[in-house]
Image (tube, rainbow, N blue to C red; front, side):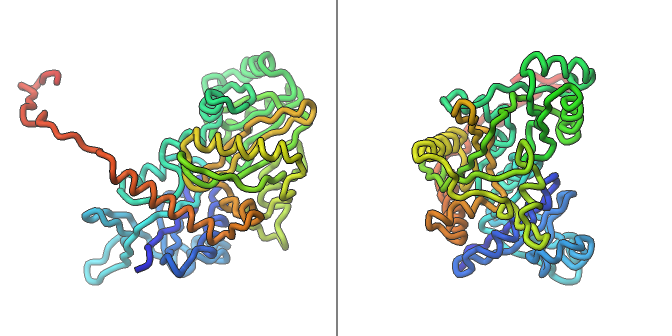
Length: 393
């Protein structure tokens, strides 16, 4: 009997469209001899749909029409068996119903990659692929990630976060950033990916614009010193907190000071058709020394394991060409296109990569099944509130 997999993509995120591309890429490369895979589209309002057109990229040229011709489903757990069921249900006939053994989320950005969706599936009681709730949440917050990795000796740039209360006086906020970092300075939403809302400022006017732009997408922003002579080196990692291996290294190429959203998903597209992160202009392998390549791969694995990741992640590093220093930049716990292009040079085709991710999810599920999540007690037998005011327990 084939394993029933629900492959979920989309969601309420600024990276919604990128997730659709990544999700359908994965769907088209799953091992159908082992798995019965159902593509599941999560709309920007958080509803789930299945249907004939959901797994076809052409359908997303007209999403309202796609939704009209698809079936909305909800998730239910009946005696530890999870199903997707048609919603609303029909009184006179049986609607759509599909058992789900494993959920494979291929989602990017806030509300979906940050532990929220993972928490939903964990509460539902279904096995899911990729990072657990904690690793997903920590990995999405750039500042929290820095603090964790700094504690284990991974080199990171100094950074500072600012909240909406700081934004109430933009002039004062600009003064604080200038005093702390000087110029050039890079401003980022603390919990977004795909380079959305990220800008480098070289003077006061650019700083004010950068701050305004970052606060469009997040309530907390991060400021760091911007490396002037920057090269970006990325490496993917596959495994879990116990064992992990690193991929080939890449150097993405960009048109501006930083790799922009357009560089990632638009400029490298053939015929105007984006293939997600696979569209990026890049050098694979990166043109770096064997010593630096080994260092990047070792730090990538160290970061992955320290954050207790699972499945596939991509770790992005910054190389300061002026002094040769290497810094961790960020982790993508569900990277665009699942970073399959970094594994193919090592002889791991996309289909095998996806299979390994599913097996890692099964391994985690077996481990969790062996743990105790209940504690026998008779505390409720003697519980009493003793009247309207009650008592402390």
